[in-house]
Amino acid sequence: MAKSDVKLLGAWSSPFVMRARIALNIKSVDYEYQEENWLVSKSELLLKSNPIHKKVPVLIHADNPMCESLIIVQYIDEVWSSGPSILPSDPYDRATARFWSAYIDDKWFPSMIAFFWGQEEDAKKAAIAQMEEGLVLLEEAFGKCSKGKAFFGGDRIGFLDIAFGCFLGSLRVTEKAGGIELLSETKTPSLSKWAERFSSDIAVKELISDTDKLAEFGKKLQAKMTANN
Amino acid sequence: MGEVKLLGTRHSPYLHRVIWALKLKGIPYEFIEQDLDNKSPLLLQSNPVHKKIPVLIHGGNPIAESVIILEYIEEKWPQNPLLPSDPYEKAVARFWVKFADEKGLSISKVLQSSGEEQEKARKESLEMLEIIEEHAPGLGQKKFFGGDKIGMVDLTLGRLAHWMGVTEEVTGVKIMEAGKFPRLEAWMKNFKEDPVIKENLPEFKDTLAVMKRHRETLLASK
Image (cartoon, rainbow over all chains, first blue to last red; front, side, top):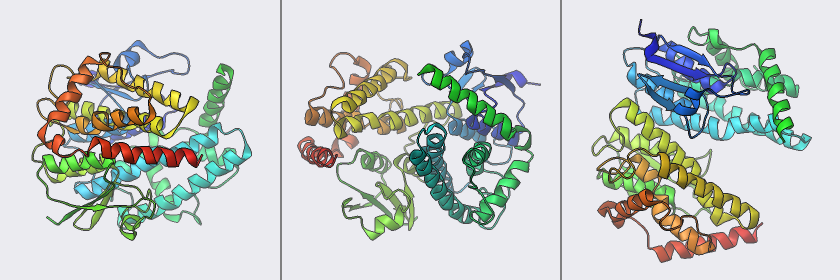
């Protein structure tokens, strides 16, 4: 088995790493996984493979390192072309999937981060409002992209499902921490059902982290950053 | 294949990325100038989420976000490719496109701020240039980041070829010291001299006037 040909540097808590792992699972790629305990120290291999950002995930394929989760997902889709497609085939649908993935990374997830690190009530409330607004847009986008099917990508999980679904764990932690419901059958009916389907998909199931474990890690992260300041 | 319309403002670096891609591939389009202080129904309808330019409308279908537009153009019109065909080289190119797109914002911030905030933006811009000078593959060996021909990384960094200079002159803040970035300087010269780019750059003095007004308006409202 050519398992050593493909290596992924990751962290169990990272939604971005999850994206790469889901993609590798979809294509049934055998790979070696190296857990980075980045809160404590970064491995030499990580620092060498991603000298500019020093972050996970990093995919190393035949000694070629590449970084940035969505770029890695696209690479996986292109190289293992005999497996199920991750990106849509139509260029306009691809642009739509990329648009919403960029929205999630550039606007929606940063609101979640703002809530996580927010010190004052006002800032936290504003962050939640932004997240809710985003979910309304994504609920609508789901209707358009799925065209009545189970996932953003249609019958199977695709690029946008992966880009968004990786944040479901953090979303649940946020809901618990804020005592709020962000994804619900009343507010976001389609996304609610989609979330369940996504989480139980065979390519995703084993990668879902326990909400409490994630919440605990979050607290550790907050404590460390506070100690550093 | 359907007509191509492009919504933008004449002096936007983001708009120019798309213009250059269309020109390099020989794709005819209609430019529809936008007034961002008085947004048109067409703009609001085509980009309801961000309400920004550029927006490409192809056969009635709108696409927003310049880098996403570039990927769409590349896929729809494969002639004169902007990305390598090898998947790994493509992944590397996309990394640098993302880097240039995100870090390039610091140059905008230099224009849009003053005092401490501006100094921070200047340092971030400098850091971006240092990283590119040191790490970008092919720089110094080939004419462009894309090799012998202009590619997507070159287009995304096009801001350096015109708008960085404008920013420096408007603000009096130097971002790129002469002589400190030999490889980048060589690239900038090659890029600006390319006939397609040269023919599709606004007049320096015109962009200068627009950016000066833009900065004054912004600072006055703070």
